[in-house]
Length: 532
Image (cartoon, rainbow, N blue to C red):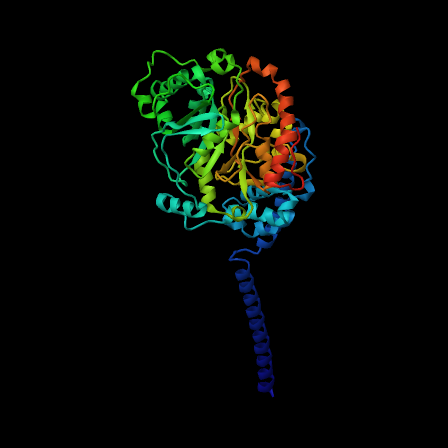
């Protein structure tokens, strides 16, 4: 009987021990499963940490969105920004990848800022949430393994394949363009022939009094520049002398020789007395003891004495058509670009992210700013933001012509932090509130030309091209870290004070003649118009 009771007790203890072992195994299996599902964390606090991170990100997002409310004077006529439309739904997708960064909070702030900057895309572009995800998320996470840093040949082949462009001849020609003779590629740059995908050409126009801006432009651009110089009558010889001076007599002359190609044009009724052949121009060197005075000679200009209007759009089109590269930046001589723009832009194109695969035609506008007369021109967006903060720089629209320089999302652009890569900040349209926008942009040879009947004195010289872009349903891909700055200080000529009557005449011509023509040639589209 004693043995029986003892056996029962032993069995009870064994049963209890067995239950404990089973319970322990269940707990162990549950712990291992949670460990694996949680991504390999070695503590039980990861869940609470995740929640705290999400709470912190929500707070950080609110602070970032509140930063958008920059001083009202920057865009006093722009409609109020709707902060509540910011895409908060994107938070979870960002949190999933938070471990990829050494500093989770800093990385999240960077990504949230990109989302805040990309908000409120134009409704005509489809679902804004989808486009926000494309620009804000894929631009960070998407990489292309076909692009290898340092593999210039592979990089070039990829660019050429994406652009599907063709190379252009680089030879001097004498052409006739309406009422003008054109000496195309009259003085060629030392870079020689270029492949269409190799660079971007800055295309511009001027007379010789503006050539003092060429060196600062080249120091920042360091890529091909195509310059159309208006030189009727007796302006021709000073123009040649100025070109020789720039190529031979300055410490920076190597930049001019390497990158600058000069075209000269003049009216058929104002042909110079002597026009040397292109191969003879540089045989005669310039006397470098005789300094060029450029702007100081304005009153002596032949075109001023003969009261000739400056054919600004003729020059723009000549310089554009002569560019060797697929991409061109058609701008004015006194607009200086941010540094390293060409290299960053081509890398962006080579990445070929989703928003660049859209089928609609596009251009890439650059915001424009002005700085104080004695201020240095900012090299990058970070320096520009500091100058804006201290009122040493202002958006160009605040210096006059507000409606034609008003850019979508300009407030958000100015407060968005600079990033290492160049990306598209916002995709907009030239409609509704921005119907008068005349952006300066990076485009291609396929874009509409400028109307050559409009002169500089009559103003509104870019409005016809802007309408054509709108009617053709172009998208305006505003770049996040690229911009233009007008040369410090402004030249004011006596002729500027007498432009009122010509502006009224030009507006009437645009309204009654050119605008009806454009509607026939390019069609109409809701929201597209010309207001003069």
